[in-house]
Length: 295
Length: 295
Image (cartoon, rainbow over all chains, first blue to last red; front, side):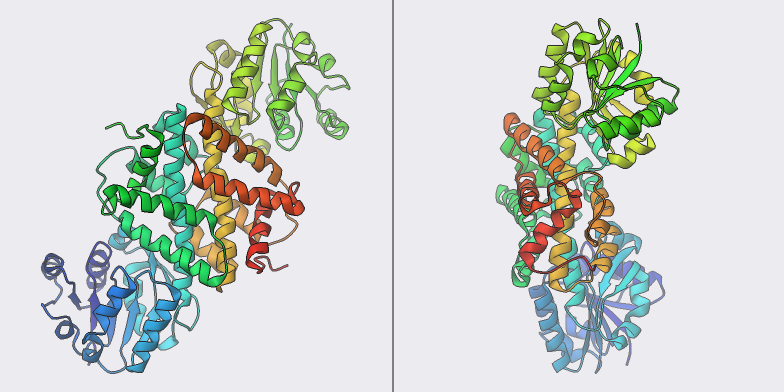
């Protein structure tokens, strides 16, 4: 039997699922959230209340949950037994390289093959089918996954044959994204306290040597309150935690990432863990005693 | 009498001087370096061995030296007495806001007016006449400086009437530039140690959410050795020192800038202070025990 399935239909997964179906690929999908399943069904996907039943006999499964623990829970409570023999599992969650290798090994014991394929581009990239994919795994996995990857991405980087390489590039990439996000907050809070107009400061920095993609994207949200969460503070605590731990395991000190991690933890400690990750500005505002936002 | 003069014909100043003269403005110039003066004379400027004599009777003076101490030494040992009465002094060095205010006050005592006008864009921007200028000062100073600023910049941000505002925006901007530069080194060193191919890692990050102007510009130099210095490690130690001190004076904690500052100090401690600022990668390589560069 053949068929394509997906587990994880949240902020990232829903856009990816939509683009897979738009490419003409029938898709079976599961999420623990009943609301996510209902939305997926409305958009033409087939779903149900039991994950193993939903994915039964599929030979390609895309996993887009938030953490390695969620991925293991999703896969190893019946789902992998229900898949077609020798299926390919695309793991697109951001996980530690050691976790990617462990999940791949456990899948191999059951005769399945894993593509270690985390993504970058956020909810906008997922919605637009323009994610960047950092992928490693055997040729057979790339061959089977090819049309699905093409449907969701602008670029697939092929990084080698072994699970863990995709995860390594993604975790290292998150160092830059996380440091630049927190640096944007540090700059905006310092500038506002020192007497700069926040919008003028942003206009100058974003058109000069201080520019970054994260500042361009997040600083406008920092100048308001109540931004819609596309990715949360707690998700970035998870990601920067992976950066710090993977760097430690590698023997590489990361003082900037470690400092950024602490400020994100502070934002969560203020009760903002479920807010948009641009809310890290609130932690800096708490320390400067001076608001950046005007509303 | 009227006339335009410039003090500081180094890495930044020589390109600025060239663009001023290319705009049809005759220019008198001085630098402590005999080589810099000779180059300036070859390009059509008038110069000499005594700064006060060179700038005599000019009513516009552009100062592009490295530090506030150098600016004070250049101005207040005879130069300001030699200028035409009521001259305008454009201070384009990166200095602390408090230093900009102090120099402006001292100039005012002598009947001169200061434009606080630091620049961003580096040696390339100076050479191309495409600097970003962050300027504050009275209208009369902007009026007199207008044609010179237009000759060297792509954009002049007018930030208010008072000295210190231009310097404040510039120092806050340097937080982003400095943190992004050191973050690029931290990422490349961590990635190389964790098994990533440096060029592939750079290609992925620079086309994803981890992109920054500084990484785009400096990471390629980090993958070689012996990059030509366009701006040095020691210059960035000065700039990040201004960030940390100005933030402290403002009551704004800057943990990322403080960490970046320490890594730059480490690079200088290794004997690399006069090297290109991308040499901060060598400090990370020393700590990971693993080279990023291939040559």
